[in-house]
Image (cartoon, rainbow, N blue to C red; front, side, top):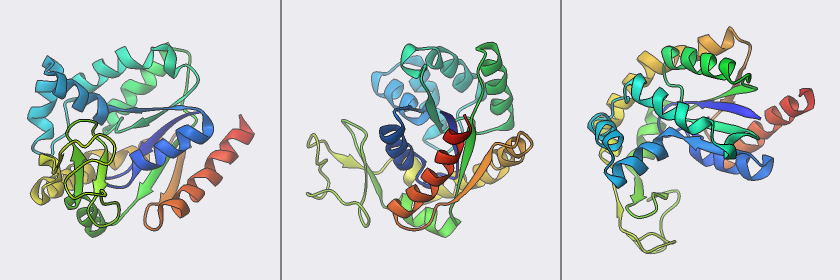
Length: 219
């Protein structure tokens, strides 16, 4: 299946996408991970992306679209993928439709995770990230075994610039203004599936799975 996750920062898109990939034998394509990898390697793309991400702003469309063009044609994505963090604007969605049309492909569905703003702020300000492997922790819901240390590689845990409260509020404002119109865009294509993103991770996944199984039965 070829899917898109839409939802505000901290909605849990990455966590749920990882579970879907394991069960449905597909691949997660996270633009956020691609940005951070390029930033860590010190590439020109990474430097450009960091100048926007550090303040909680969206990376410009031309950077994201160009990167996705190079990535999505790789063999590991031939059997399906979940796009996490892309598209974030209607312009990007239109570009994605054009790209998929050129490849003779199409999307199977768009999952929309809905979470209130106050819950998102609580989630994100308590998030910590490993400097080495980029694994995420939550100091309340998913703390590391040793404070400040990654369970997997003993890397240092830190709070990303875009997880500071002011940056989070800015990110949510950006989402409201630019990303939520995607829901209307994909509703016009009859691809939207709304999911309540509040609750236990297992319960949210069960809701997602019931929707995906219906898609699979119709393919």
